[in-house]
Length: 204
Ligand code: TZP
Ligand code: MG
Image: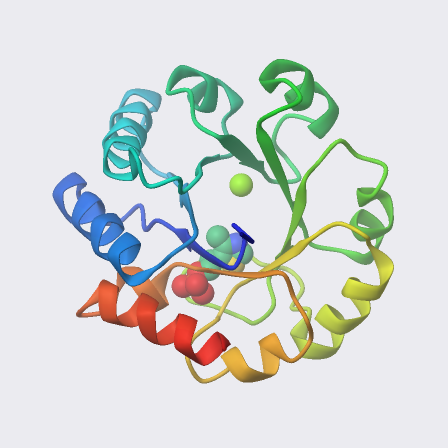
């Protein structure tokens, strides 16, 4: 199974109860991977929230990925970590997490893309495909054409992120992209289960 297919990234504005409820419903709706993303709380809160999500995912086979922090990923024995360009270098992260964990890296520029295949990573998060209110400091938006050309440049699986919703799924999927990562389209939906199921249906 392609675990990158429908990749839920959690909303750090949601409280713990909402977080676990959203993840649980999204899992029921069919998400294939879950990343816990925390941008505001301290490391204790990050660990607490990651452990709560881990409990929800227990027995589902859905990989748990931790955003930014290798130490938190190790602390909760997650399935992997997703790094940004200002986080720990991928080579060092790989040494710390070992060969079997999943390592993802956000790629924001053509230069970073050109260097990606030489890194010990498992997938690329192509960031950001479209402008999004969820993350306002994105410098470059790849768009559909940028995604298409990125798919030709790298042999790594690409997960598209940023501004993805039911309206742009068909054109995104027509590129052959390996996965779609979303925050608001699932976390802010009235019914995250129905939202995830509908997104999957649109993906065909
Ligand atoms: N990285 C690039 S865009 C983004 C992240 C974490 C946010 C995506 O959120 P949304 O709500 O799916 O546009
Ligand atoms: Mg990051």
